[in-house]
Image (cartoon, rainbow, N blue to C red; front, top):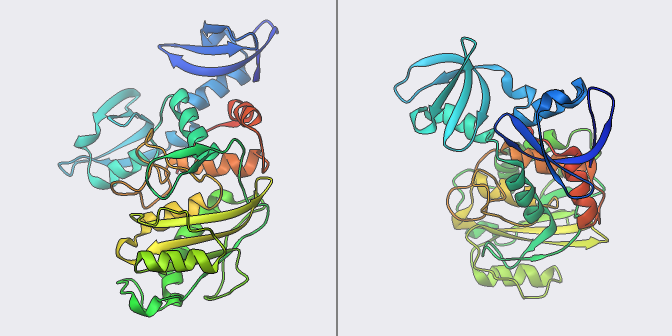
Length: 339
C-alpha cells in the first residue's frame, strides 16, 4: 500500500493497479477500485505516477537507426513489445519494432515496459516458485523469498573438463575470465549497494559457495549430483543447465550449477547465475527475460525487468519473506531498472 495525498491534503491508502487512458486505477484497503485523474494528487504523487509510466532514466536522448540504415536522434519513452514510442521535435513518434536495426531493437526490447499486472504476475512466478525439474516449464509454489545474505564465492570445477570442446577457452581459468567474469560483473552492478556481490575465485576450490560443473552426458549429471549429496530426482535432460541450492529459512547457503557442454552459451550462463541468486523459476509471461525459460534464444544481457527483479529482492526483501509481505513490498517499491 502507498499513502496518496490529495491536493487538498486528504490522505488515501491504496496500491497502484494500472493506467487506463489518461487516468490511473488504484485499489484501496477495502479492495475498491478507483479510477482517478493524476492531477488531483500532490506533486510527489504525480512524480511517482510519471515514474511508473516512463522512468526518468528512459528519457535520455539517443541515436536510433532504422532498418534502412537511417540515423535520427530522439528520446526513449516506452516499448510495448510491438511498437517503440519516442519523443522527437517536441512531438511523440511511434515506430514498429520491425523497422529498427538490430542494435536499436536490442535497446528497445531491453527496456520493454509491461502493464503492472503482468509484471507482478511474472515477478511472483519467478521469485516465489521452484522450477520443477530443469527447463521443463513446470513449477511448484515455494511461498517465500530466497536470497543470499553473504558474498557467495563461485568456482569452476574441473570434472570431465578435458573431454569438452568449448570454442571460447581451453582451460578453466580462461573460461572463467572470458565467459563468467563479464556475466558476474553485469549482475554485480545491479547488486551494488545491497551488501551482496558474487566473487569469482580460482578453479577447483572445494569450499566455494557456488560450484560450477560441466557435463557431457546424463551420467555426468547424475555423478555430479551424487558427489554433492543431492538425491537423483532431477530431470537431467536439460537443454542448457541445471542448478540446485541449499537454504535455511530462505537464506541460500550452497549451490551448484551444471552446464551442458553442447549447449554452453552466454545466455545460459546469465540465466543460471541470475537464478542461483534466488529467483529460481521460469515464466513465459514476459519474453525478453533471462527468466523466460530454456526455449528459444536467451538474452545475453539483463533486461530492465531482470535488473528490477534482482534489485527488488536484494534491496527490499528479507530471506524467507512471505507471499503476503512480498506482495506488499512489491506494491511499495517495484520499479523497472533501465539500462
